[in-house]
Length: 200
View 1 (tube, rainbow, N blue to C red):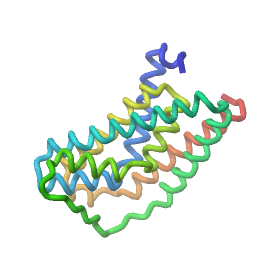
View 2 (cartoon, rainbow, N blue to C red):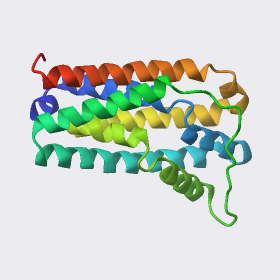
View 3 (tube, rainbow, N blue to C red):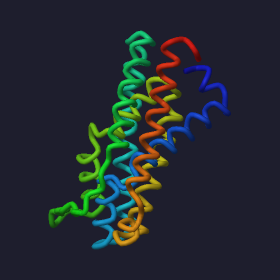
């Protein structure tokens, strides 16, 4: 971890890899649909701020949890767990089937749209595959790079959800995006296995 922190190139590489993986995994997910639905009825800026704040907090919890696990458990246990988790997420993403039904988003009256978005995103994503993936990345790479990459990725997907709107998203081939995400997860799982076996 210290070596990664001292090398700017490695730090940027870790942040970029996290950004790409999390962006692909989250694109078209329920949190983006929440942003789209709320932005259709309210101003987009509070929705974006609420979503980004929720994701920043969730990612902070994830990387702290991942770093704590890495500090207390042997490296081979952490690496094996990361390989299993990423393999599971990769297979799940490859088996994704797009559904036509829309999620019904209920908003309580009297709450600010920022607070509403924050609460909905927090509850929807807490313990979700994306947060677990961030925790896994945070246990094997630089925690700050992981947090920055993941938060920027989720901020971008939230902004896209607000700006694009439901009609634009419905025309995208989501199943192909999930397949690409699945391949990336499986690739990271393979790298973790190779690291576990001592090849890298």
